[in-house]
Amino acid sequence: MQTNLRLELLKLMRKSRTYIGPVAMGLLIAAVLVGMKYGHQFEYMRRRLEHDFIVSGSFVNAAFLARYLLEGIVYTFLPLFACMVCGDLVASEAADGTLRTLLCRPVTRSAVAASKYIMGIAYVLVLTFGTGLAAYIAGSAFLGRGSLVILSGGIWILPEHAALVRLAAAYALIAAGMAGVGSMAFAISTFLSNSNGAIAGAMGILYGSAVIGEIEYFAKVKPYLLTTHLDVWRDLFTGALDVQLLAKSVGVMLIYSAAAFIIGLIIFRRRDVLA
Amino acid sequence: MIADCGLFNAGRPSSLGPFSQSWEKASRPAPSPSIGRGAAAGRGEGGSVGRAQTAAAFALVLLLYATSAHAAQPTAKQILEKAAVHYDAIKDYTADARLTVESPSVHVPEMQVKMYYKRPDKLHVESKDGFAVLPRQGLIVGNPLRELMAGFELSLDRSERVLNNDCYVIKSSFQREGRAVQSTVWIDKKHWLVRQMHANPEWGPSVKVKLWYTRVGLRYWLPSTTAAQISLPPLPGAEAESESKPGEPTIVTIKFADYQVNTGLSDKIFEKQERGR
Image (cartoon, one colour):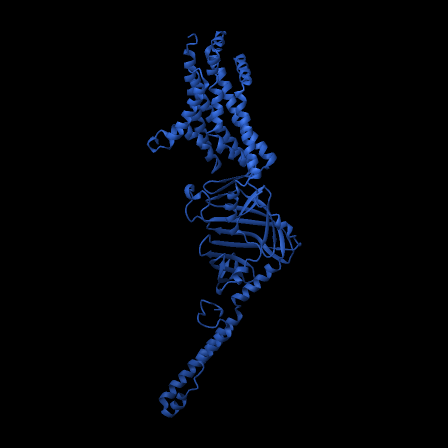
């Protein structure tokens, strides 16, 4: 298994698409950072605060950047880059014609699928947590550190240590969600020979789920949708940290991941690679 | 009751002099021809004159008693002026402040700030945690009586015991940013310090503040703690999402320490109050 994992890691490292995500996220962080440092995007927040409060210091800091970034990436860049890699794991082997050669080795199909999946999920986790960490480090260097200010249902000011805990919890929740989306891309890629289909399929399920969640008729289904639990990250910054809610949402998303992996594994094991 | 009271003195000159004079006129036996006529008219009327004189004398005694009692009682303006002396003695100060906010819509941890104040209303706040918000309505710096003294209606309403201090209760109306504000202030009879304030504007948040004092350098009285109860207007995002009960007040408690008074703070400190970043 270790050999398989090392092999998959090497393959992942040698593919250019692996680096698209981190580079894009790095550029995005830089752009947001410049906007926060030199722009007036959040002046409205300050003005609103100054209406009723005497404001000391700046709320635009590392924690604010790391939290603000999530608003823009949870439904766009993160799932896209997760799908780009996870959806390519099996489909690219089929497209390149290396799948048959790969399975000629004395390893079980399950071990091959599992090592690919583990590498895919590891990539998703590194990408998600790496984005948060990079944002916080860059924010600390250029904006400074401090309390996290949220304007949602009133004013919430979280001291830095509490903000870090909430940010870690939010990124963990989102990483679990991205693992779910990546798992779906992996499952789709097991029966396709083109990764584009897997990417489109998984993103389609994600956006479809978000749309269904907004339709009143499907209210009974909403608690089971991936997007419902992905949205829980916002609640982590207001009120007491609800560990039960966090655990439940992470649990649901892990079930999505496990179910997608099992489906992908079954398809992969039954896949006719000789045709 | 004090004479320069708008409520009690409507339609009359507001000073004590004319007020007592009008009472004197009213109670003085009238030097009218009726007395002469009465004496000529017979004994029957002479009895009523005697009763009138007794009543007049009684009224005079009452009046003297009342005016002497009033003379011991200062006017609302005098009370405010005497209390203002404490606050006017303070040209500037710095202090460490610990601020706690209990509110349905403002959720902030205990904040530690350094406050710089310079007369008349310059205030600079530095947060020790990088960022802090201080509710404007809950902050009493400088002379809290300035607005009241400029008020167009001022009256001594009653005496009341507040925070274990016998206090004069003064009511005032004034304009703040185009809004009429009804205000009540409780002034300690012994130390002439504001112990409690209540401002109720035409619209916007109403505020009740209680103040506890400390003596700094044996000369200046400054608040050691202020506790403000504020009814805040809806905050951003609160309209749609807040779970707070309407009317639930915000309580802002500020504890002050390490006062440095009249050190001659530079204006530059107040110019550098951060605006944005």
